[in-house]
Length: 396
Ligand SMILES: [Zn+2]
Ligand SMILES: [Zn+2]
Image (cartoon, rainbow, N blue to C red; front, top):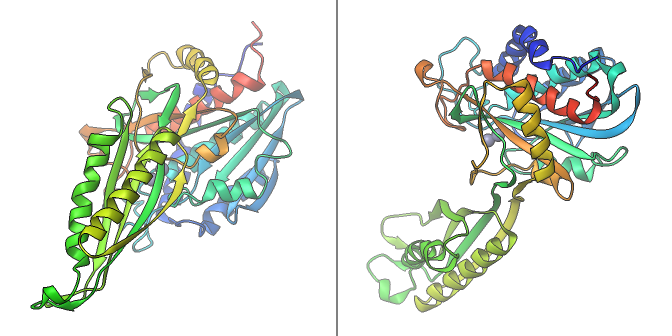
């Protein structure tokens, strides 16, 4: 008996894959509010006869599928949260909740993993090992995976392998990304406060202007990537929000900047944070102000295990020879799946989901983000086939 043809089985599940994705799309729930979504997930997993745990990492759901014979444990992960974005698509399945939208594709991930659970459950008797299905909350704020880890998602049983995917609108449907090593950047969130001395806008000499100081700091911080980070390393520093001041004629007391740092290596991260702090404090001091920096890690970088990627490469070549595969593609976007993969063999891959001819190529987090739903079928077929690599022997 050879392995089941999960790509054909996924194709047969096309209608429920799309229906479930659209149902979740219409009812988006943001970080740690995924109560309705988790309910849909848990009910479906119970229907499949799986042992289900809810409330893992607040709103996460975990189900265990025990194979017929002993073997490795494979963790398959999907994230469930939406974003605080007002949807601008005019599709019939558009968000029914004002100000919230599945603008990253996590509705699709949830639907895909439910289909994978259905397919693998059908073949339980052919399985040697276990599958742990993990439906994670709050990926977008970088807290859901860590919350699930704190609640023991990596214990009893501990997974030998962690696998997951992201639908990816930067690439057309029919393409996949399977990159070994550093694949997605680690992310920090930082807050920089500059404190000056407020005064009348017409009497600047009586104060110390924190807006001027912040202006110099924002300009200077661009020197970190161009002048401090070794040119063959990679880093991004972006300012996302500046706030300060009340009126046109008042020099304020303080200004605050929020921003992000993206790096692949921990040492690069350390270097960037140290330089940022030094630039900010010295620049502020030169202009009569003080600066204080707080930096917090939101996601580690996603490091794909070369052995796991090699095995998936062989699998994808066999089951999906028609898909164009990228093996050197990397992105500065981050993913907190890194907390589930940390210190263990894992692979996270992208499934292209854009279709420019149909206008389905807005980027992630855009109010008009939408996917070519063929990607759901591709993703489900690939993820089930990938899991089978560890829990189903190839008998020819
Ligand atoms: Zn996102
Ligand atoms: Zn995402």
